[in-house]
Length: 258
Image (cartoon, rainbow, N blue to C red; front, side, top):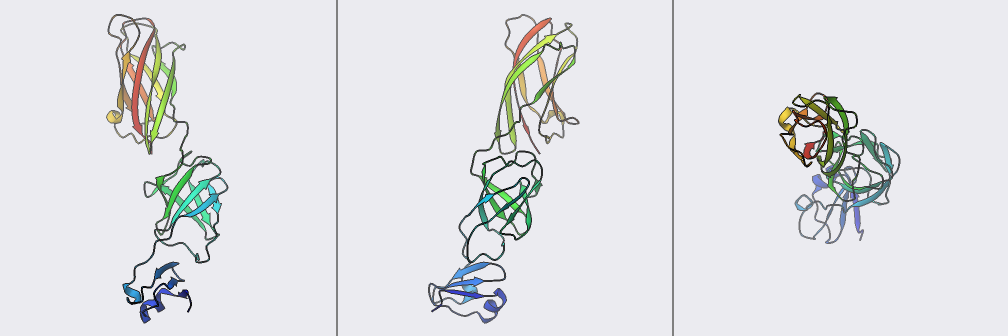
């Protein structure tokens, strides 16, 4: 008895036989298989899910990888791969498995990858949807530089400095830290900005969630508000401080990256 039966899906469906229990029926045109129970006709058997195929992906952006499985002939929908990438991506990326052709890697179903969505040594679950590889549940550590860059705009000395940290969860970035605002003139509109290193999904100035609190031991109303600069993908601090000189604030905000 042959343990593995190889035939096309069209032939198997047309003939609809009952196979011996335990036989593996492999559809060679679509690369899927069923396991016979000795009772049910072929159409009434359910397809089996392949286990994870483990792949080491080399290259940058145009990644390649391979694995050994005698039943693998081509990709099929819902096939899963666990992939470790040697290098981080710098732009939109593709993966070519066993020479079957370069397939685009997408996040959030159809969105192209951006810089550092894939990190060097990172391990990811990729699922083939019939057109693209979708990044599924994250497996390995994912890092990258999402810290904003401080820039001075209105009524602020060049000596203004800051320190910040961030936490990334999926496509949400949370930033917090301290900024020492060195004001030139009191009671004048003062603007300080932070440029985001990764494009945001801002559509309204109010899309930003966050705030800034005075932490220096000074008197008077030294308040700053935060809003999103949707044109330049920046965070803007704006206020009218009543104290000249260096005043320290703690700040925090969250934003969604594209």
